[in-house]
Amino acid sequence: MATADLARNSLVTEAPYAPVTAERRVRTDLEVSIPKPYTDHSTGTPGHHHHGPHVLQQHVAFFDQNDDGIIYPWETFTGLRMIGFNIVASFIMALVINVSLSYATLPGWFPSPLFPIYIYNIHRSKHGSDSGTYDTEGRYFPVHFENIFSKYARTVPDKLTLGELWDMTEGNREAYDFFGWIASKLEWGVLYVLARDEEGFLSKEAIRRCFDGSLFEYCAKMNIGLERKMG
Image (cartoon, rainbow, N blue to C red; front, side):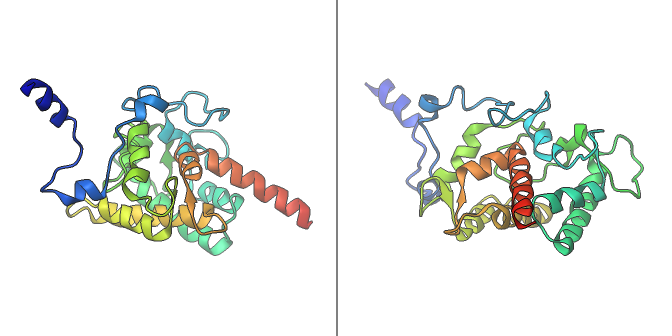
């Protein structure tokens, strides 16, 4: 009996003297709906043609306009324009993204004045204070993705409000990780502007598709269709 109680208690995810563990609950039932949720799932969205790279590489591949494995600032700018951002926002974001991420992905030690991002090294640019959905090698772990919603989705189980996104980025903060704090808030803020629905929610499906990059392809196609209608 004592052994059974000990085993049962060892699986409890909430500690009575740590209220935050009750406030931010983790999923314990994922094996029922997701095969091996605690291991890497590299394929991403069904039907999304990823051609072999891991999910973090898929996340940025849309912005590689000529498919040479390198993303230059003007390619980032073009991609942002394609998914619906205006010229000013696209210019600022392209500059911030490439300047921030370029050096970590370079194959050598010397910085490049063109600020290229090398996709095969994109895992090196992963910052702290994030959700942990990508690991340090760029793999995708469903358990951490699902925990975003079990911890922070208070209004609707599979959607996040702007306030809940803020709470999530605050909850994920790591000590003295100033770059990670800022980067996380900027990334989630941009995603909210891009993909929120008419009621002001950011859906689980939109976030999942952002992680593997298929959201950007979808937004680009939608914008092309809208331009044709207006033309």
